[in-house]
Image (cartoon, rainbow, N blue to C red; front, side):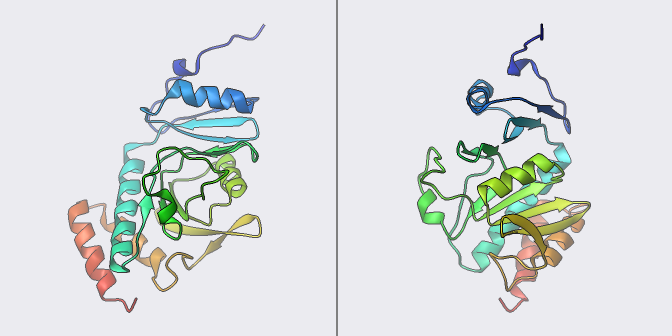
Length: 215
């Protein structure tokens, strides 16, 4: 007879992941409730497979820096935006759920102002999601199921942009949200600089770099 354990008994160290199979939708909902909102692990769920992951400190620093640079870019372009951070985006119809490292509403920002609870039956998905060291096939499947238009993925020391096209993600040299800005070049450059400069200086220098461009 299989031994059952409570989800709260699973303790993850930094950088660790655990995958649980055979989890139905109601069990997934129950697990989310048991885990609560005040936790450090992130989840991904797709058609019965649940993944929990605990980010590394370096992962968190890269995420925060990319998000900061994106906000500066939005400011320099005079664009309005909303962010829901690592909120849980889930769809029972698609049997999919994801908590991105960060996410931004740009085109659909107005729909998110003052938003307290998400319902993807009526609410739009983010225009752009950020993931650091995204290597899980399950996570890509979730994003494809939810059809989030654009993902910025930082891995192997470089930023990659993936655009949702015809039901799957294709790498792109240009951002859909910022087609006039060399996003990959700029973000990758300042992530490299982050190895020896504090975020405060990186923010200022990134703004100065953007101001030299014709955007």
